[in-house]
Length: 183
Image (cartoon, rainbow, N blue to C red; front, top):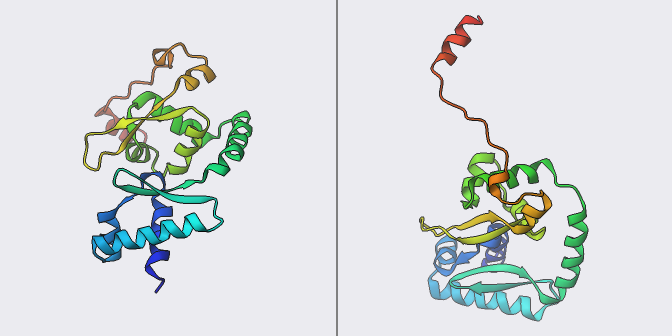
């Protein structure tokens, strides 16, 4: 079995921007909170001492990976290049869901799309089209996302009211009759 440090590192990578709380780490690794704190401190120190491009930071009671400051100029260059490319179908789909349903959580987006959207959200945020707005009052206080002024600018909208109206789908009990008539 891998050592606890490797397991923690993998878990932090998997959860991405959501991060993990000490209590979650302790529960997942079946250790005490004090042991989780020490394990986390050791892992943070190893990333600070080594020549890694990422580090572990704590915001509030949550810990996550972020890129180190020396990466930021290259990241900016990457994202500037990325902005020049057209948006993929998945990006447009995710963006449309956010624009029409905002403020919306990642879980709600994933429920609508039927697939994970963590990477897509990061890409849209990097392009300046989506932003974190606030946190939901729901359990776990998930982040609520919304579109930015840049989104309005890119799609040449004065406001979100300029978005095309979505078709109005009603539950029509005649659908069963229509199916039976076609047989």
